Image (cartoon, rainbow, N blue to C red; front, side, top):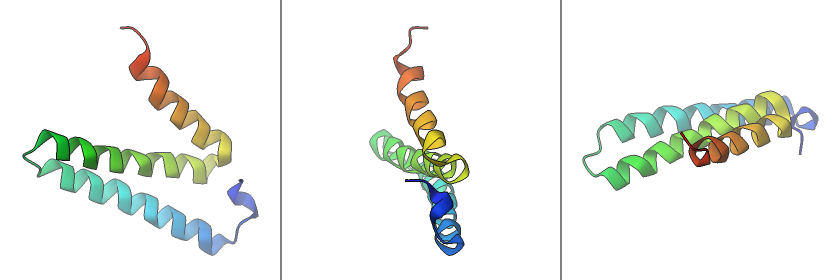
Length: 77
């Protein structure tokens, strides 16, 4: 699905959710004492980055972010 064919109101709303996800996920992750909770909120904020790529570049941008998130950690050092 390409967001170019969606109402600008929905694109703005999706962008606001993405930015809120990034901000709140990172702020809450900083104050966590438990490593599992910190990683959970970190993943929550990373999905905001994927949403921004999807909103900005359509399905190709979202696919690029998701492939990068899987490819880089799996590649040998």
